[in-house]
Length: 118
Length: 130
Image (cartoon, rainbow over all chains, first blue to last red; front, side, top):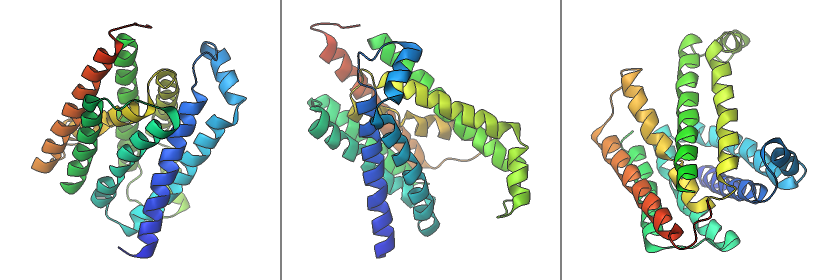
């Protein structure tokens, strides 16, 4: 793979993972209910950092797909699922029960196989 | 909590799936694809593009509601049920053909989500906080 493609791929993984972690941080419990909860979330930086990551990810993904066929893009995108799982464990102390790990890896491999066959 | 996850993920997948269907309908409406203002105007004149944006907003609100309690790792994996539902609807609505690999991949995704659902049910047994 050319260096640009690798860089764009890595940027996509980092932005996707960091964006999802930001949303998780923004959605912390006990912020209230309904509109009050959304106001509380809007007053903290995390939701905006997450939205920023999404916009960046969208642009990086478009650039990536202009160099790589969509099916390969989907195949490589399945790594993001594993990255978010590992990051959730590191930053939010999420537990890895064996069944949970198997489930996440099955979903990631399924997305990869769909990419291979696309 | 189990019902919260079940309903939440169903709503999320519906929004995500209909957003993709609406984008496809928008793209069909705006044919042929061109990198010019005329194409942008054709996109903007399609009602489907606004339905797609509404679905995106609905999906975002649902996702933020789910994340109040759901751990991000398994939740992010489970949201990929969208891949299966979009494949299914592409056959039903757009008469697209799907390959054997896509069928096998879909089966793996569903099997993974079943594992996640069972692991959540198990984890919840001692103190249910729903």
